[in-house]
Length: 139
Image (tube, rainbow, N blue to C red):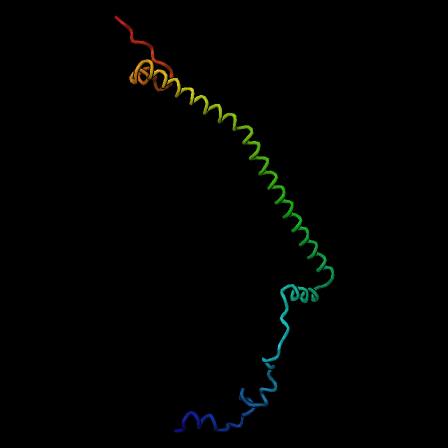
């Protein structure tokens, strides 16, 4: 039985099919050559040459129209958002302020009653509805 080195050196008659042979190396492209790297845009520009002029024009028009539509939609959404939030602040802020003022007045009234009549009277005279209770009937 032959060793690995001996088998490697045996000539099978197909020396030209060996990748390491000079004949095959001359046919293969040289990997050491410096090829210019193309950018993505250069490759796309090169690919456009395979399409007819009408297809290129339609593609350009569709792309530019989409770009314009997206810019317009973004501008509209910014304006609509600004209008919505500024209008809601102007319309609802006074309502919030009035509700807060009414609550503060109610708290001040309860505190005043507590100071004048004592802590238990302010709680017992106010029902769940916020209206004062009727005085008890004497018999």
